[in-house]
Image (cartoon, rainbow, N blue to C red; front, side):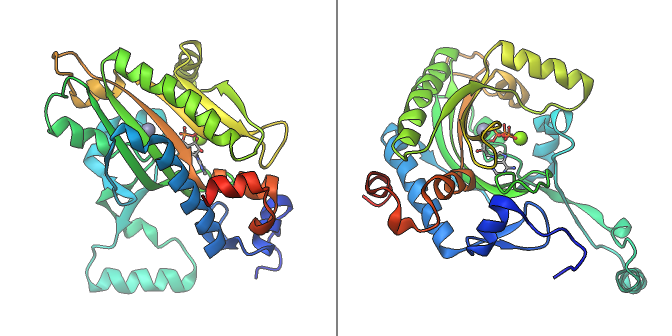
Amino acid sequence: MCQNCPQPQGFLAELIDSGLLIDTGVDGLYGRSGLFEEVIARFDDLITRHGGQDGAEVVRFPPAMSRKHFEKSGYLKSFPQLAGTVHSFAGDERAHAELLHKVADGVDWTDGQISTEVVLTPAACYPLYPVVAKRGPLKADGALFDLQSYCFRHEPSKDPARMQLFRMREYVRFGTPEQVTEFRATWLERGQEMMASLGVPLNLDVANDPFFGRAGRMLANNQRDQRLKFELLIPIESEEKPTACLSFNYHQDHFGTTWGIQTAAGETAHTACVGFGMERVALALFKHHGYDVERWPASVRNVLWP
Ligand code: ATP
Ligand code: ZN
Ligand code: MG
């Protein structure tokens, strides 16, 4: 262990001491214990019990996506600061020897790395849009997908609820503005009911994404004014600044236009998604009910272990 490095404090230190999270020496990058994973699995199942009857098509992508698709998605316009790209060595033996020297000398060895065709997935729904676009126009009742993926965001933090690699479950709806806004309204209700059944304090609020730069501030204001993003907040790291555990996003025709996705009637499709932060919900449960799941309130245990 590094002697001079600041040691984890507060809730993060407790999570590491209890063994639920495993320190890797990198802020926001943790191992998970079996118990932590069990709670995630039970919550995953609870989501399916609330949303499974809608007939969503289940799709799972690995935690990386096509760099070409990522470039086209517009993510770099809005969130360049969060993106994570995958690079690899492609040199000859001489370059390899140089690389090993640099590693041994403790100097930057990454300048010889070249970009690969993959980047890390920033949100579970990003790999989906080009796949749906490729299938052609939507059916009259649109489309609905069930996704889950590890996602990467370069936002290292001492707040255990702000990880660099975390899982996001999502339902994503494609269709007319009416179909899509109805989906979001349904999940705004369902999400609150579902989380209330877990006995944690909740608060729903309008929100915005952290769009980059000065132009980004305008996008963020517009997103708020139009109430395009809602978050279900639960206090985890701080009481004053509760953490977004579920989010409800209406993208209007942003992805429909970007990817050329059409409704059955030939209009540009609208999309919306509901995202569940799996680790954040698990952390909220441990925060509010303690580290011993056997002693969680019976009502909560009955919901998670029916
Ligand atoms: P925040 O405002 O806290 O940064 P966000 O608006 O960036 O959250 P979304 O982009 O809507 O979050 O992502 C969907 C869900 O993924 C969030 O509701 C949250 O539960 C979860 N999430 C987002 N960022 C992180 C992170 N860094 N670590 C863990 N979970 C996260
Ligand atoms: Zn999404
Ligand atoms: Mg964020």
